Image (tube, rainbow, N blue to C red):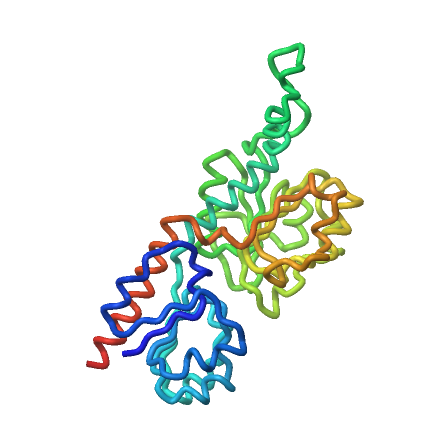
Length: 311
């Protein structure tokens, strides 16, 4: 077996050596579209996170038997062509539930407390000049009693609900598909959830129902001091609209995902006037230590199951 991983860098520091027992293993840290075909040419198994394997590439890979997507989404693969050519596609799911949920709470708690402000106040030596032992300048809001609305009550959404509920938050949710009828929490129409929630977190996939789900109209419904968090997918929140709204309305926003990643140099989120109302993280919610270890184990198990089935 010849095995190649096209974008190992997207997994951060991790041990891929167990894959070597399945065959000749070649590691590429990153791969451009122009390099994809050449690097994949002789592979029996390809591992990819974000490198696209479309029909034009798959048609020219006669040896390819298995594609392991090192993520949940398989939109980077032309599934129709893969099926026609008998190429098995395996993804990994559920590995990052705790990781993303923890990141969501981290973002919310930071915005509620204005922790960055207080950290800077101390480290810039302003506290040294104080005539009292403490300094209070906004923030310091408790999660207890807050209304937390969840958009997308899947496994991650439910974990966030559990964690936020442990802090005393009142949980409700909106279903983007209309099919989720979970009776554990109060279901609301999206409009009501946006109007009534103090904190809204998004855990939905990007599809025709969720593309630009939150635009100018929806943002106008948010109450004063509301917090909006997107850890679902870029493209669910219209980035130009939220940047504009942050300039004119007293709300807060945190996101781990953008419609285009990495971030453009002229992105509206880089506007200095809205920095204190935002937290941006570079698509890391899924990548806490245990989650990445679980992901690698699941990928290895996918390879092992496939290889054993072909013996």
